[in-house]
Image (tube, rainbow, N blue to C red; front, side, top):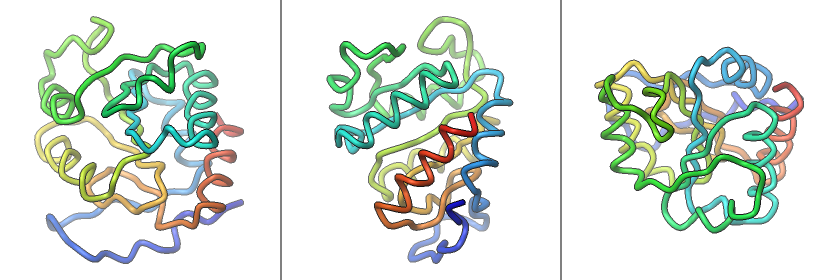
Length: 170
């Protein structure tokens, strides 16, 4: 088992609380229990190894994908439900309980974020953390302090191993 909770040293702070460090098995349980989860991916997912894992997460857990930045082309011809949306706009929409969601079936209760620059996703999650009830699970290589739960700072090899463990436990 990959220990994803060990390296959560903070270099900047944005508030008085930080996310709880989480292991892949617990993240998988939280994702499985979510009523309306959404996998939110950034441009960093276009790495082939990471893209395959994002597709596997979406397929195994039957989760729609919000493809932000220029990540949408990576999901064309994959057997997943992917929609393009601007990340800043998505962050704004998630704070509105009446938002119909990308599929028209209502807002999401849990978002899973992957493949973003730390400083970028932290700012967006600051809004969702403070102005909504949406839970955010960060499964990226960096510890994301404004998520509800996050992996710690990981090497690339540990990150891939953690994602594989998460997929296995979904």
